[in-house]
Length: 296
Image (cartoon, rainbow, N blue to C red):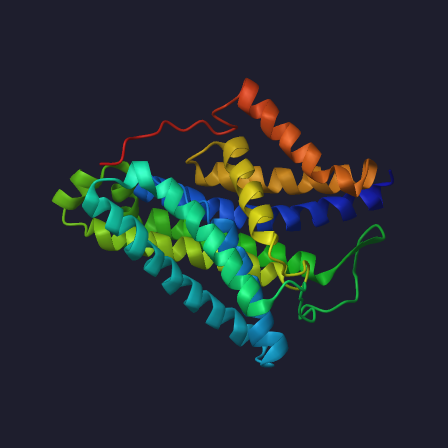
């Protein structure tokens, strides 16, 4: 393998990994705030991708405006999901026992709703980032969408990091994550905060759906694909660790891309889940071990 090919594969793998890292990060945020696992998060990516197709390709709304509209819709969709499922179960005192089943049911509902609205034919949008490769030093050619996906994802992750570390909202979010009862005694509206986290997580999944639209076809199966890759990213990176979710996603994207090039494109999932199995066997806490706390 030449150096040029290596860097082309590396950039491509990082961009795909960034798309995996976004829903993985959303899953981590919800787990830390509410102690539930959103199995439907991958299907949120699917819905966002289909919405992007409808707004941009069918209604001819510019991609930038589509970006904003889909993010807003997905945020409120996430807030609504928390109110309908998690908040209801919390009032019943049955979040831990019933949330898993409810989110699996939500994933199945979203797939069948998408089948009813958009049908079974894969759809895509015109690439808004351009189709002419960008030439880097050393005769390395990279597609424009690779830089846009990496750039937007990295900027988003930086904004989230600053939000968590430097703002009162971020401090309240971390307090809710660490101990909900103590946070309530300190004046934090933990119910609102959990709803906000669900909305934020859903919007992040929406961004993954938006950015994947020019790269992947929007299909009914993409929710399961993104969901399983996000789950694997969390396990490999360290469940509950935001940094681990990002690192796990990037690692999977790079390994998949190199594996597809060196072995076969059919081997991508085999490589990913072989890696997942190895981590479950020999390092079940992932790369970034994180002590978990009970949500009360």
